[in-house]
Length: 128
Length: 213
Image (cartoon, rainbow over all chains, first blue to last red; front, top):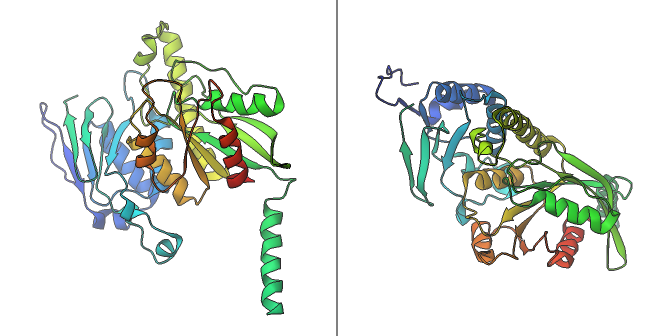
């Protein structure tokens, strides 16, 4: 992770490469994301999470929500396009375009999505 | 030729036994908060069993535990389809107790409700990964369907190879826009309905029988 010390008046952004995520187990990825978000960081994943990992991320996030401390996460990926619809054959062949999408995750009280379409995610990030 | 026919019959029998009449499929009702999931679950349960499943409310996260109505027998065209209906809490990635304060709730009640809501969402995700055989995905047709929660949940459902029907609910409201939902999920069939008014439920039951029977 980009170990840049967060300034008091700034927001740390961690851009995590697909290569870094490749050797990690699902729970390691989720832990890394949520640890960053708990610290008020914006986490950007070059290649996103699999649907199963997204499901577990929601589940673990829910267990960590605490009143007045942590309200959960905001997460954005590009919406699924028609061409990204992979059939069973594609998945058997290891092709899964859904897991290769840039994903932005941040604390729910610090990041607000302004606009999203197939090619653009525009978000407003505020300080803690 | 005979051997191929035998193998095909054997596979058909195996599949049929997996989903035999004695083993009703569990159909999860999923969607974001306030889409009308419990209203739909109650409509289905009342129409075919006479009982309701749970209380309905305009306040988000009224349903905070997955509730199951077993052996709901739906009759279509002289045949019957038996399913277990699982009404689940609305899925979200964030819960802020202060939103409940806007509904004239005391802080203690709001905090308790938010804690129960988070447990309910986690439970709903667990059911989706482990315990449902098909999904009715309910959306409020007056709202923008292009949300991250909808995109993720439909992706999760697809990754599990679960049969899914998209239900565009609240068609009784003037702002309802069914086309917008069809465009958001073109890979799935969208059925318009008003669970509150009972509009178009015949088509919903026909499709439930087709998809999950």
